[in-house]
Length: 200
Image (tube, rainbow, N blue to C red; front, side, top):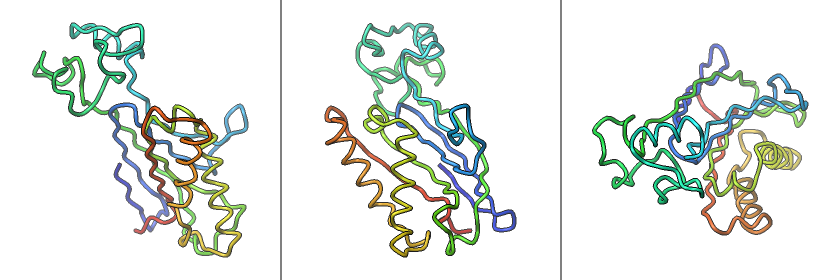
């Protein structure tokens, strides 16, 4: 993920590439609401073997997806780095059973530049990057709630938006995924980026 802040336009330009089943979610609480009165969220697409386009590519390369959704009964994702045993059937990246070819997402988000005086009722802009161990047990809107409540708690304690401790918030999310939602068969990794803290 590559993020730049344009000081003149007060915008963060974001370019994100993803391969595999870790996922990023870009939250803009200022964005237009969807049909459920929730802010629009930009997310990456998980590269699962059962996705029709991914399954078709795998089968064209001579592989198969088993009843458990695994590539050649080995791997649960259709794109990944490594796993070279599944990459020896072709020299072209898009013709391999398992490709590392990424999806690329570009977007731009307006940021309130007066972040040191940000109030609790102002709209947060942030990115969560996490492994599937989190997303398998937590929806994007649950994730949004964890982050927003964590930021609001710290603002109520007198911190500025620049002083908010993001590690505290991600630690709570990981503990909830592991202990409360029982994501104990997979690792859980979470990275939180608060766009208000990005420097020009």
